[in-house]
Amino acid sequence: MKNSIDTYYFLGIGGIGMSALARYFAAKGFRVLGYDRTSSLLTKQLEQEGIMVQYDDALDIVRTLDISSTLVVRTPAVPEDAPVYAYLREMGFSILKRAEVLGHLTRRERALCVAGTHGKTTTSTMLAHLLHGSHLSCSAFLGGISNNYHTNLLIDKSSDLVVVEADEYDRSFHHLTPYISVITSMDPDHLDIYGTEQSYYDSFAHYASLVTHALVVKKGLEGRLSQSSARVYTFAVEGDADFVARNIRYDNGVIVFDLHIGLQTEEVISNMRLCVPVWVNVENSVAALAVGYLLGMTEAELRAGLESFAGVYRRFNMHVNTPSVSYVDDYAHHPQELEASIESVRRLYPDRRLLVVFQPHLFSRTRDFAFGFARVLSEADSLLLLPIYPAREWPIEGVTSEWLLSLLPQHGAAAQVVEKAQLVSRISEIVQAWNASGEPCVVMTLGAGDIDRLVSDIKQNLTIYEQS
Image (tube, rainbow, N blue to C red; front, side, top):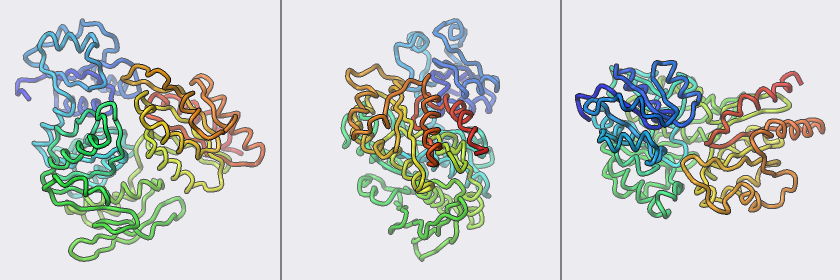
């Protein structure tokens, strides 16, 4: 990056990863501003922090930028024909992808990168929390808002460790140079970019080859990463690996497990306490603890960090929890993610009815994994589907929520497509009917689109059961 840069303009500044980078440069004293199509909680927070955000296609602001001292950072989510982007490109501004900018940072620091189809946001946030509270400390660029720090960015100038979420979309993670990397999963996704499942696997193999020191990978995936010259460590839940969680049990709303470390000698750290009691988080915990251990965190630091971890916004957040009804919101948007979330709810509440509300994300993902979605969603006792959230895509003929619903086994009135305007009242009708018959229930909202904007209304509507 040019040393003369004093201004950073972000195209798609409201994205979770982009906003973290914007905050980083603002904290370093640079002038930061940007564009996004819609206002959101994140963009409002950025504005409150003094970062200017424009939401229209007017060129007045970008025309004032100095081409010699401005770096434009873009996300692929902003289309190339967007007027602001087109202007900056035509004028010859230096434009880099977010991943390219992160790549420069990973070559200046010891980068701890977390990749994977699922689990990377929780694992990277957990790892950052573990390190932040230890003698090592760290900076971090996260893909979600940490519930411990209420931000997606941590900065510690005294530490050369930086935690980075490594995004495989558009092969962005190929720009990184990880010192240590975790790979949590490799379930094919983004086939609109990769085309085939093998191409997706090949992309992870290339990413693994960029790791310089150590690779911590979920047991069973290491065979696909033969290009890596880094030392490979495996992790698992109830299996054989270098780092394993065993003797897993619930204890008064907390998950407790023993961490087995089988390197030179067998070592056991007993009774590790995970206070975000989601089953899939056990696996994420083992991965994060493995990196902390390899970096030299003490047993006391590992214990304290895990027990104080409060989770990530929209990663299995519990908003209502009463004897009559519980309400969980989660970012899950891939069949395997939905399956993990639903399994966690079933483990927590084995005797409750389950209402799943799902907003499919992207037409291409819905098309590519339709039968997987249908299989998983059929596990709900009642299902409400919102229309597909398009994000960066145009509609695909025949790919709709109604089509997805038609692939499910017959549910009758228990499964239906609803518009957002009718969702809160429909949830109330279902919950009231179950409660009237003496059946406690769990409501889950799932999806990566704008379903999160309905969480507050749903929560408020369900609080009537707090006194029941």
